[in-house]
Length: 266
Image (tube, rainbow, N blue to C red):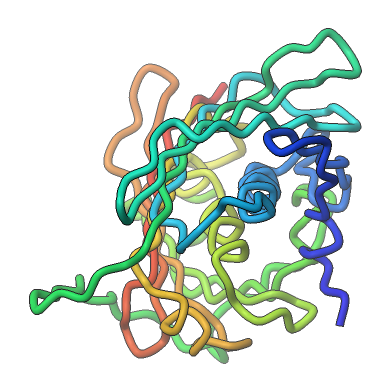
């Protein structure tokens, strides 16, 4: 089956180190590209390199400019190759315009090792799906919201909540099974934390975002098309900046991934 995310992140190889990603406005926020889609497209390009190996451990993005380019050129450089880990640098440019840098990403991939030490943060209690609120497309929502099944199990947007925490049930609306591409997309779907800390609406833009995948491919594949639980929280809001922390749990409580981002708001 041709899933929406796969079609939207189809990359074209220009050379061994250069790939082209065509903007898909289905995955835009309002007037620019959704950061989760940019992350997924970048990961797709990296995995398309002939010398890519292993699994992705972490992705660290710096968003320099709002991405409205029709064609995004991704320059992928291998910075260092170790025995089991590789270190990559991706630079995204708008080469059809003035060649400006749109974003950069530092990515670590490699072979996961087994360990006799294991710890997993506890998943908080949350409302079951049938008691949660379905998030539907509306004029105030980003364009991509219709691509996901989203149910809000904690937190009331545009109200002053006791904290900045919200909990989501999430999966692909078209039944696409979970993989690393979907995870890096999902972690950018929670609403800005400012939506849960005061009455009214403040628009926000992400400056930097780090996503870390702790689960191996087998643990991710085991999710299939089931819902994940996304717990998003905020530690501080100050000087028109806020942080957003997100943890991605399998329904049995296994922590699959986490993310951390810094954003500014008006």
